[in-house]
Image (cartoon, rainbow, N blue to C red; front, side, top):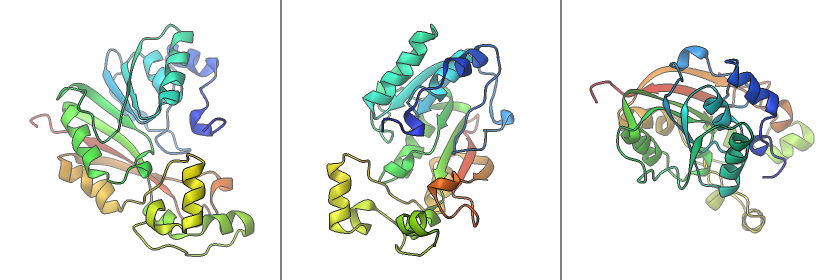
Length: 246
């Protein structure tokens, strides 16, 4: 994880810009989240779900929100706290499974920000249900996730040759789709296991949990990360609302 784009804390200049009211964040690799998706952040109770690493969390705190960072990684949470301390920002951190927010009371947050991360969760509906529970009526869930079609392909071959070849069927799971030797290497290297989730689970799952989908956009990955970029977007982001009478 060290040296990874998603675990490298933002430079001081980014946080200073946010303190001055100039900030952007991403749910997916490249496209900024539209400003229209955000309410006024001043004193807003905001849950950053599974996005530790010293990036979005301190930006939101610098922009005036009351931020709680909830992440399964103690290292990622430490980076959030480190950047916050450097800039005298107050945040709260909770370590735990994103599918179990039982340490948080019902109807507590005004906004949940959840960048691409449920690719590491075996099931997504429990996550959406927990998000709905802890969100205040009238609140919103901003989430990013992977297009499941990404997992059809042999990306190692694509990176080496530029050729795309379908290798796996969906749903994909490192546990059942990888050869035993590859899976053993993954586990021994202490790398997170990945799972594909259908659009029915991702988008339909949010509506089944009680949300209304208010907006959506697609995004691509960096060119060096996949040979799919010239052909299709590999990420989606949604803005989902909890009815004010829920």
